[in-house]
Amino acid sequence: MTAPVLEVVDLVKHYPVRRGPFEPRKIVHALDGVSLTVRRGETLAIVGESGCGKSTLARCLLRLEDPTGGTIRLHGADITSLDADAMRPLRRHVQIVFQDPYASLNPRWSIGTLMADPLRLHTKLSRAERRVRAAELLAIVGLGGEFLERYPHELSGGQRQRVAIARALAVEPDAIICDEPVSALDVSIQAQVINLLMRLRREFGIALVFISHDLSLVKHIADRIAVMYLGQIVELADAAGMREGAKHPYSRALFAAAPTVDPVPGVSCEAPIGGDVPSPIDPPSGCRFHTRCAFAKDDCALTAPSLRAVEGRSVRCHYAGELDFARWAGGSS
Amino acid sequence: MTDLAAFWVRFRTNRPAVAGLAVLAVVLVMAAIGPTLYPTDPFDMVGRPFLPPFGAYPLGTDVAGRDILAGILHGARISLMIGIMASFGATVFGVAVGAVAGYYGGWLDNLLMRLTDFFLTIPSFVLAVVLVAIFSPDIVTIVLAIATVSWPSVARLARGEFIAHRQREYVLGCRALGMRDREIILFQIMPNALPPVVVVGSLTVATAILTESGLSFLGLGDPNLVSWGYMIGVARTVLRSAWWMAAIPGLMILITVLAINLVGEGLNDALNPRLRQR
Image (cartoon, rainbow over all chains, first blue to last red; front, side, top):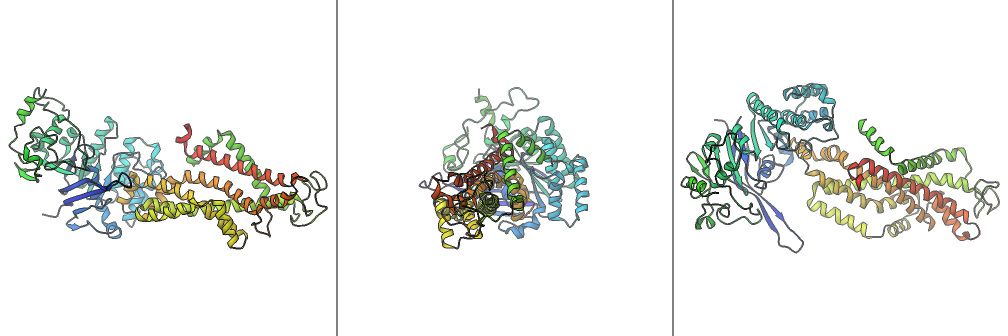
């Protein structure tokens, strides 16, 4: 089997912060030991609450941020510490589509110029050929050639996001990281953009790393789902397994809190977790979730669980597989 | 094109700015063709000194019998040229420093900003006087001295803009494409960061004209060129007997600086429409 498109081992990203000149330097633990692989042509969803490190992970995968520790491999080659010049030709393998299509297209340039940029940087096409190719790419995402002359402010949010996708597509990437690609769009447009991404994955075999907090969507479109909490992956399972029922109390609660289309009475409303996410500056000792976990025992606060295989998935919990979530449901109001 | 048209529509609604632009246009035309239409050498002693205006010479003569109108017209050229060149130099240099500091951040930012602070803390006019006094007072030195004291505020502003833009998603997208820093700075961020810089740059012209006038008044102007400040300097000893001699070039400085400020404010409103409500 060929190497996965992207492979991340034990990725760590710490940001030093200092509130004032005389305050001690503190560290934000944005990512703490994240390991995952992105296989060819798959849809890998990464879910979690705001601030759990999803976007930092995306930026590290693209080498827009330099990780503090760990390894990033692209097609099996270590790219963790490549400099900008060495990285440049490799950048065409992985592209990104951002959340806010109003911020991701430079308002000063026409769509034609924006579309020509990736082609100019990564292909040897002439100016005229780039224009033809740009029109082809726009056609793939469902926009006509007349858009080449327009400027971002003349486009709707959905159209802009299509342009952003076409731009990512221009360098024929093996993976596209989608950082909440539809959460800034109208609901009626979201489905169209999702369907477009799914079609591109099918037609071109592009792997999608789908960062989202829309769990019902993720369950629907992803092949595998990684749940993140405070800079760590707490559960990584295939979508079918996640649909059957998450094994980590956090992912269980997260999926239970997501609205479903046809709720089964008495089953869908498991206890939501209370409280707020602790600060990533001082993450809790032991298991990071123990402060909010209904099943926490004494040792959860002492020893940090590692990600271990439980029933065909990876779970970061001492008691994964032994927890009785039915008791939890009964105990809730 | 559409951008420019929209800009003009917004600018046009600002009456003081349009008035300022009209005045500025008159001054510019005066500076451009005045010396050709009225070729009298401003250093020529054409008649009796202390002639009042509206006599043999339209604006009278000065202490040495030189034609004041000739001085105003030739001086307009020098004052405006020094003002525009100094602020252009200050803007280009300030933007370069601010862009590098803001885009790269870290120790480079620290180094460049401490340098900027160093220049900002010294009173700018005193520094300009010292610089001109050290080197010979000619037009190049004067332009460089004024630019030297004017760039730090532009650098501060440009740095702020670049910091605001460097983490925007369109910039990250360009980095993900492997675009070089130089291209990102010049062709991606710069067009977005420039409007507020243009405003400050235009206001710098007014300050530069005032600084040049101050230098000339103190006798630190280029001795071979007439400027408005030089004319005031010459007239200051006879202020009580021939007040118009200082008042005429003073009025020119006043209306030119005022016009530039009005245009700058208008540019600010038209280029940064979001700030307009303030």
